[in-house]
Image: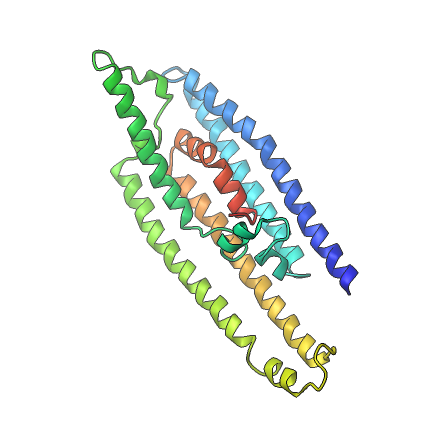
Length: 257
C-alpha cells in the first residue's frame, strides 16, 4: 500500500514537472509575439499580430484546461497529495487554497499591473513633457483599461468571490465530517491504536473522493476565471497580463502559492 501511494505521488509530481516545462516553452513564444506586436504598432500588420496573440493566449488557456484534467484524473487515485504537495515548500503549502491559489487573486494582479503601468507612463511623461511619444507602448496596456472593461472585471470579481465562498463552505463541511461517524465512533472503540479497520478505511476513501471532486471544481473555477478575464482584455492587454504575471499565474494554478 505504501509503495502504491508513493507511485501515485511520483506520477502527480511528474505531471507537475511536465506542466512547468511546457510553460517554460510558452513564455518565450508570448514574449516574442508581444515584441512583434509593439514593432508593428500603427501598421497594417498590427491586426495579424493581434490574431496571433489571441491564438497564443487561447493555447495557454487550453494548456491550463489540459493540466487541470490530468490533475483531476490523478487526484481520484489520491487527492490529498494536491492539498499539500510534497514538491512545495512548507510556506507554499500554508498559502495555497484547495490545491492552488484563489481565483480572486487574478483580479488583484490585474489591479496591481494596471496601477504599476499607469505609474510608469506618468513617470515617462514627466521625463519628456515637451514631446511624450506613446508609440513605444505598443498598443493598449493594462493602464489603458476602459470604464467598460473595468466594470466587467469588477462584476466578474464579485461573482468569483461568491463562488470561492461556496467552495470554502464545502471544504469546511467535509472537514467536519471527518470527525463524524463512523470514523470517530470506530476509532474510539478500537482496542489497539493503529490497527487497520475496513470501516474506517472505507469512510476515508469516501473523504478522498469528495476531496478530489472539490479539487476539480476549484481547478475549473481557476481556469474559467482566467479565461473570462482574458475575454475582457484586448489581445495586447491579455498578453501583457499573462507575461507580467507568468510566475504568479502559472505556479498558482499548478498547485504553488
